[in-house]
Image (cartoon, rainbow, N blue to C red; front, top):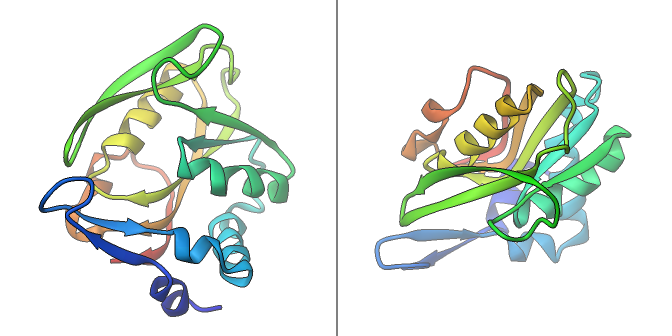
Length: 173
């Protein structure tokens, strides 16, 4: 399945979660088995030879893509969550969204120094969430081999907030 077909399965929801925001809803793509499989392959395959040890998925849609990609790459999966969702000691990082601010957490013992990780999320918009995630991974001294997303809203220039590392997006808006 080509990227144009995958893109056609992502719908725009105007004024969500607040006026002026056009939300990219991936749920139509998720309900189509062949589209979901194609998206997972397109997101994970570029990293097949990078000896990834852990895939880190960002809550919540990063979980949908991250866990199956980890299985495909033969490695473990680590969730990065919103505050108060992880039961053990955590590290936290605040960030700005296009419609507010938030923070993200990871278990303090989730990654050992030097482990090779792939960071996965659904959409790169303004870059706040992914940039904060990279800062947390740096605190844990992880080696970020790359970032993989289903879609990039390149007109928002979120990639400028990310560290200089390999970046893969299946769809570009």
